[in-house]
Image (tube, helix red, strand yellow):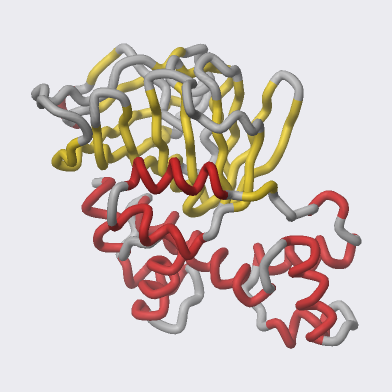
Length: 297
């Protein structure tokens, strides 16, 4: 998923663009121009883009942060952080895309569907496909590959589960090649959040609010811990303890990417200490907090 292109530039912020949130837009050329290089795929120095989204009727300014990781004549790979509450009304992209959600969540609306997306999901989107997006309370960190044509892009419409253990390989080696591989190998999502029994959905919502232990959560809902875990895995595809750790990591990620210190972010997300937070974020995104901050500015 790419950030919308914008017209006005603020020199004080470097490569920074401003536009009302929800404005109609079409994604075009990269936000940062670099010297042309001959040959095929090439690694390039990270290029950061800061996009200021001014919310209509509100004084709040939302900042989308983007770092270019790799570029070739046919594709571009970016790491993008979308802040909490950002809304993009219906728009389209001029290039086909493969995207992987590393952290956070959002709701996407297409002409024929409306669905929620969270960490560990992949999607492919054809060039020109219309969609609208509302980002969740912890924002979203997305690895995006845009390509010049739809040729060779998997035709599956919608989001599919991705193996989060592959995230480190995605970012540590060739992100473009890894995303292609993941898109072709991923299976349709097994999560059935909307169909889950009310008590299981409420247990999940409880973990979104407070990182209680699995034992406490089971006692709260009057079920055995093992039954809670089995039900959680059956309906949501992951254990409650892993989900709790992911939510805590996303909360910390949101905190330090929106201005908080690492120590403050660990405390806000209720980690025992900064070291625990660092490990959880590396597990979730494949990158240490310090590296993420350097990438995204």
